[in-house]
Image (cartoon, rainbow, N blue to C red):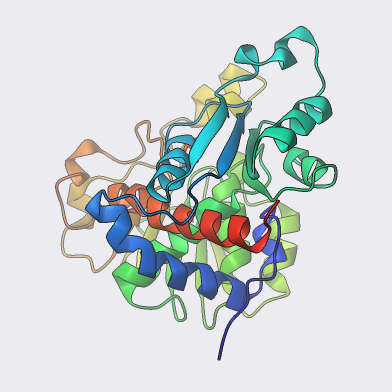
Length: 311
Ligand code: CP
């Protein structure tokens, strides 16, 4: 059966169906050789990707740039509002219209939820949400799922603990929504009381077959999971630094607590102190592999959206 990828924009993983996710993961698998071989294909030769990053990023911006270049295309853009005319008072809408004129697709990161959706409503080129505030980070979820499938063998029947900042963490919101499309998934939610998973995300999960449980310690669930998905307590999301300092370091994974366990450790990164560096040189560390998997997955996304929606 020939599958078709129907979406023009990637704004929320909730816009996907399971077959859309599987389409991107399959395409990513086919592109992995090019991603790893350091070769350059001609798939997107002559195409330009617009990178509008209003909020800092290392992995997302660099992996989109790498992916576009590996496909033979090029990138334009800015890394912060300060280096664009937004700092002179130009509106986001006008800025997006400029990018629409110059490029074949836009990648947008912004500290406010909904900005990518707003831009997708006013431009004709495909728009990719690279993280909007505490909202969604759908392309991170696709590379997370790609990593889980490669490392565990399947996404169905997964037992996963989401740990850390579940309130503001857009990666865990998107991932929870995506896991709802798979069979027999169990999610343990491990966070300080102040950073629990928002009710609206739980409401979404409740509409699926996923079972979930809130727990207050990693020790209680560590023998029952395939994946520890660790996230950073995000200092930049707190209005009061005192509130951040009270819960900073609440959950820390180290090598000793992992010994003898049959699981992998993932993290969208950046890491502060929530995974001890003594885990880095163990078989449990899949967070650097996960970051590298961003290239084939984002290559698949760019190839699909730009080829399906020629200007
Ligand atoms: N995982 C992720 O979004 O990392 P960056 O903030 O560095 O892009």
